[in-house]
Length: 356
Image (cartoon, rainbow, N blue to C red; front, top):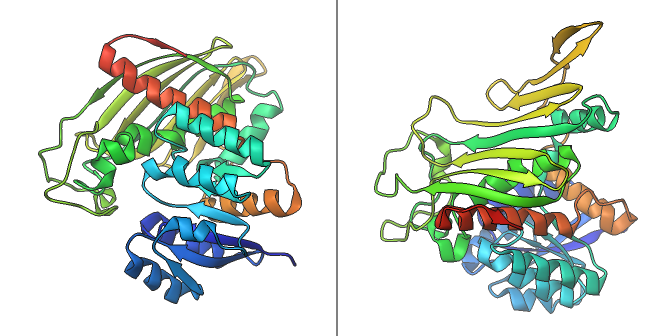
């Protein structure tokens, strides 16, 4: 069996928790090098997962003659820099979300992939939930009719990650929960809708908890904190998106609100059926009409079954590269995503709707 030879760039929490563990269970992928600006972190991971080579500078990794692809797990600002350089060296690229901090950088990534003919894929793991695949088939069978309005969000309760580190430093992250969490749920609902083209965005952002160290969320333990660091991003973002086909989307993403429970959620409203899901109950509800009356039902789906969703996304990447499988993600979807995020921030700053 031909194996995909991957170099992992970045040895932080997401690389360890979602990527290396996944690769260790994949018989068609071999991780041949790990790189991190903190070489002790790369060495520790390499020893744990029996990876032969460790690097401190990603440029040295890109010169390796025996790799096929790189997997980028760095702070956000480095995603397009490394991705474009790797694509220009004829390497396939898998990248953690978000694609980039600006739409211009996402476009550069797309253009580099087009020029090289190599695969560029960005993590969209929520598409691989059991409820996601079921609902996608339900929609494609025409059972929801026209999806004309959706809501989605991710609310954390006092769960600011890596406070004072790169997560809360705009120059390195691009923003707060909108760019950190928003990619996940906006992408999932867009994908379920069939990826309509966004045409206008309005939004508001707030930073109300930068001076508070109170936390009751496990998510506050993610990332590396810095007591003397920077906090110049939002902790709450809300917005409204209009699409070319007339549909609309309402969004909400937060790191530290005073709310009852943390949750991810989406709600889709169609002319034939509606659907909703939240991470608290982890049940998909479908609401429709049959025989002249309204009917509510919950499909019997175990959302925890099957392959872990990050691993499923990485397995799909390997299948696309090695076997020519049809990609579930294409770079234009990344460009559209970052345009939305960028427009929410612009609208929040100007107080006006932004037209794309």
